[in-house]
Image 1 (cartoon, rainbow, N blue to C red):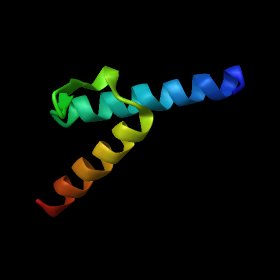
Image 2 (tube, rainbow, N blue to C red):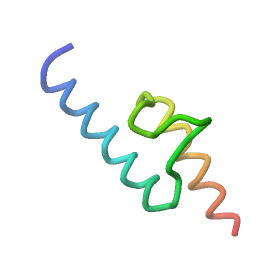
Image 3 (cartoon, rainbow, N blue to C red):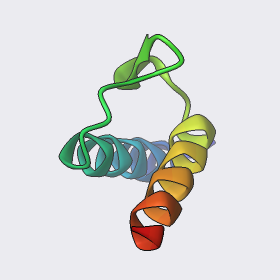
Image 4 (cartoon, rainbow, N blue to C red):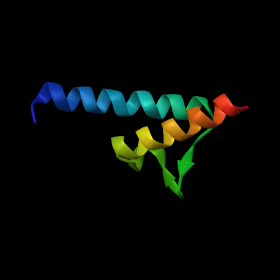
Length: 55
C-alpha cells in the first residue's frame, strides 16, 4: 500500500473516532475506539448515525 493510501486510511479512521466521541461513544465491545479497525469504526458509526435519525 502506498504511503498516501495509508495516510488517507489513518485520516479517515481518526475522523470516525472524533465523530463517535462527539456522539458519546467511547468504547465498543469493551475496546477503546483507538484499538479498532477502520471497518469496525465505520460499522459502528453507521449504526449510531441510524439510531440518531430514528429519535
